[in-house]
Structure formats: C-alpha cells, structure tokens
Length: 179
Ligand SMILES: C[S@@+](CC[C@H](N)C(=O)[O-])C[C@H]1O[C@@H](n2cnc3c(N)ncnc32)[C@H](O)[C@@H]1O
Image (cartoon, helix red, strand yellow):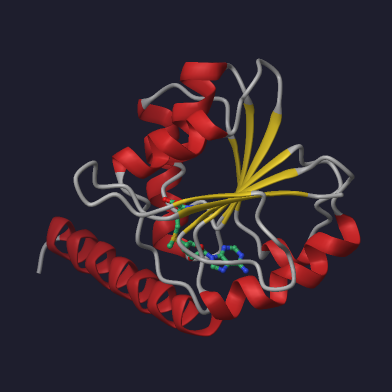
C-alpha cells in the first residue's frame, strides 16, 4: 500500500470515529443535529427584534446558520454551543466560508452561565428543554428573550406563540421574556 492509500484510510477511519462520537453525543444529550428550516430561522430572527451589537446565544447551535444569518443581517454578536464533533466541525467550516465572527464553543451549554445573553434561541427537545428551564430561571437576567423552535419551556409561559404554518413552512415558535 502506498502512502496516499494509508492517508485516505486514516482519514476515513477518523471521520467514522467522529461520526460515531457524534451519534453517541446526540443520543446522550437528547437532541439530534437537525437544523431549523430556512423559513423558521427567518421567522425566529424577525420576531427577536434584533439590534446591532445584541449578544445572542444559540444553545445547541448545530451548523450555526442561525447565528451567522443574524450577524450578517442584523449585526448581532453570536455565541453558539455545540457538543457533537461532526456538527461542530461543519459549523466551523460554514463560519469560514461565510467569513463570520460568530463564536462557536465545543461545549455543553449546561456548564456555562447564561447571564450575559440578551436573546437565546433554542431548538432542542422536550426532555432537554425541561432541564434547561431551571437554569434559565436561575441565571438569565430580567428582560432576556428566549425564542424556541417547536418545543416549550415547561414552567414558563410564552408571551407569544406563533403557530405552525404549513403554507409558509414554518414551525411553531414560542417567545418568552424573563420577568
Ligand atoms: C435540533 S439541533 C438545532 C440546531 C440549531 N439550533 C438550529 O436551530 O438549526 C440541536 C443541536 O443541539 C446540540 N446539543 C444538544 N444538547 C447540547 C448540549 N448540552 N450542549 C451543546 N450542544 C447540545 C445537538 O448536538 C444538536 O446539534
């Protein structure tokens, strides 16, 4: 076997291992790496009333497309958390391609404080959002806005819910304000 074949085999092996780790991380964190669709992202950004310089978080940012789009369109400062390796790599590549300044952390968001966030975007799962509600209530400042694709934050009442719109291909979006 020549050296090129060896390198290709090593790369395939490394990718397979990362893929397996990603699947296991997704399984244990309780939310799979499925991105919000384009129209739902557009809707979530519109209802967020974003201003230039706002610090926005996407907890479980996937490929970070929501944060990058917000930065390009509204001039926000994006911080994303992603703990699945392949998804994190895809986010880094997309960030490079789009010449974006968003910060993507390869971390479990449960380990960091949410006190600096002005606006938080979510698209996780009912189970994860149940655990997240306590953290949000404890750490988020008064006035923090939380915008969730599909899933509720139990124990918090949304001040607005935009229902699923099949024609426009948008999911249900819940908007919360911390009091
Ligand atoms: C359904 S995707 C949503 C991606 C993106 N927010 C969007 O709306 O397109 C959820 C992502 O959250 C990540 N995730 C789940 N729990 C996490 C945790 N505790 N810390 C960091 N990332 C997490 C998953 O790996 C997955 O990529």
